[in-house]
Image (cartoon, rainbow, N blue to C red):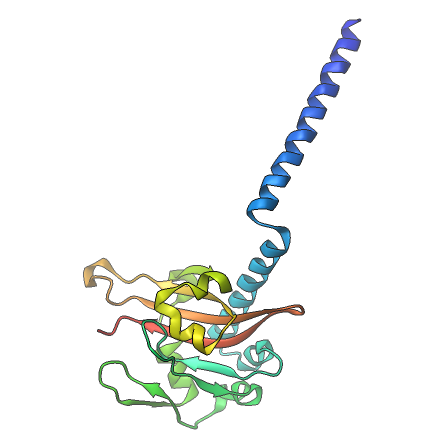
Length: 208
């Protein structure tokens, strides 16, 4: 065998080994995160980020277009450690008109005082949706349906929206205040064959 033949055989073996390793890596990745599941997760995160963008810009017409067909959009001022989730429902047309609406709606009760939360849509979003710069200060987390079902602090949310997933944007708070100023924006999503869509906008904070 000549030197050229030897080099050619070595190159062939190296290419064969590389192909085998590539197949092995692809198999392992598929076992850990099947392609459809990965695509679903990416779609949910993208839908959550898109909804956050509409909220930040007060583009309620755009937000309304993300509402799941045949559904209304739910708003909840508190979401964690509840026996029952308070939800105020709005149809697509109502949501689209939030930017100019001067009507004060009942959204639930303030935790602690128990007083009624009666605010215009703009004021509610100031207090219970955009109370932090969640895109830059928040820690984004995806909870798909199976994981959300097992989340003990969100049992009431799961009961109100069975089968959903969520994207959470959590502001961790400041150590100087013992992180008592932590806040969380929760976008409740549904995965459908046509793509992910929006079911609810929830909020959480430490008020006790």
